[in-house]
Length: 172
Image 1 (cartoon, rainbow, N blue to C red):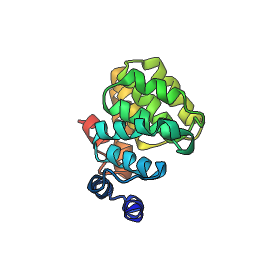
Image 2: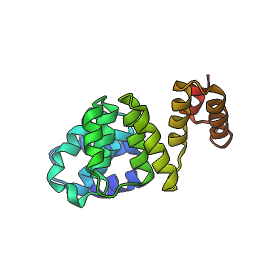
Image 3: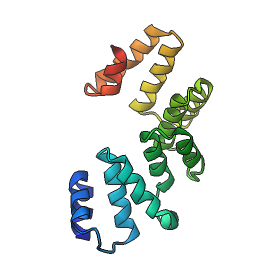
Image 4: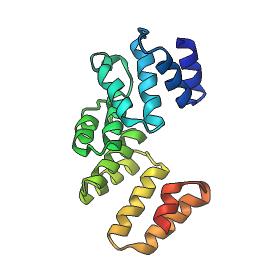
């Protein structure tokens, strides 16, 4: 079963990872395999299950890369923004793309425009650019009534990523 979970995770078949896990719930698995299952639950939008599995792994978190980032992402998806912010602030390896995406998203959800701008600037200064970061920058522009700038940014994202739903939704 461990091999199947690893193979399905590598193939980005997250639903199958969870199915394998659910077929053998009583089987004792290494923390790293439970971690893959928790991340898989997150990626298939089963946030409560992801949270449950991640919290079971709390004692093993030092062995699991990006544990606090994934737990923060889970809290964000569950609408627990303050918990999400608290977890992401405890990340020791800050300043990666995922870190900035989460910090910007959390600040947006909390209505903290100055924090959004701060983390956008930090992300760009660190060379961390992603379409998610750019979409959030466009949303901030919209909030500040800079519609033309937001439209240009969103259109530039769509030119290279035509299926970017977040960019498309904010362009309408």
